[in-house]
Amino acid sequence: MNGDDWLADTRTSYDTVAVSYADQIGGALAGEPYLRAVLALFAELVRDAGGGPVADVGCGPGHVTAHLHGLGVDAFGIDLSPGMVDVARRGHPGLRFEVGSMTDLPLAHASVGGLLAFWSLVHVPDDAIPTVLGHFRRVLRPGGPLLLGFHVGDGSRLKTQGYGGHPMRVYVHRRQPDRMAAWLRDAGFTVEAKMVLDLDGSAPGAALFARRGRVSA
Image 1: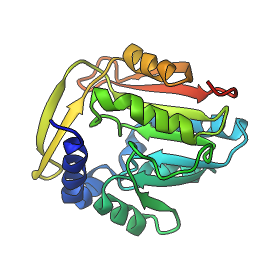
Image 2: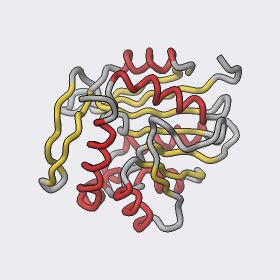
Image 3: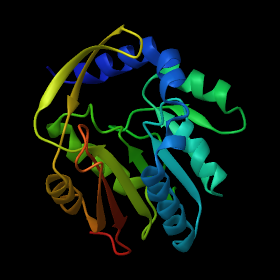
Image 4: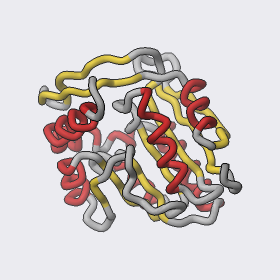
């Protein structure tokens, strides 16, 4: 894959599946007590750090954004796919959703009190991760918490269809928590906690909690 082809492929793929994706996963958190616990802890950390707006980067149809809002967090969503943003706005008309790329976040320096990327880094190639994490650090206030959720494993696979059989072209990257933690430290974050989810299942995941330091690197 050359240059930013992966961005165009990801945008087109999720524009294509936006409605069916929302139908399939919109209520998924109801059956995921550990994910809800992760989000509740993140909301608590945001409040303890002083609150403020929280960016849900790669928000998809907005179900996580809405869940955080229900926890008392001033959450808003950003997604690469205009189709997904349209679905999110229709489904959650009281919340803010914007089109934008995590490789060039349309947010001001130190403008958010927290940021999460909940299984939205899975299509980002390894060589783009430092750029993405650099933007995450740039837009976070000093001391602001960061939550990353991702698939655990090794290697990548090309996904050519999904969510009702619609055509897609995205690479799904699985990563080990220690590797992701190393990338976070290189980007200037302090890694505070690691949680592995569905450890014995077919699709384990991980949540990493990190924080932007109060002194700029």
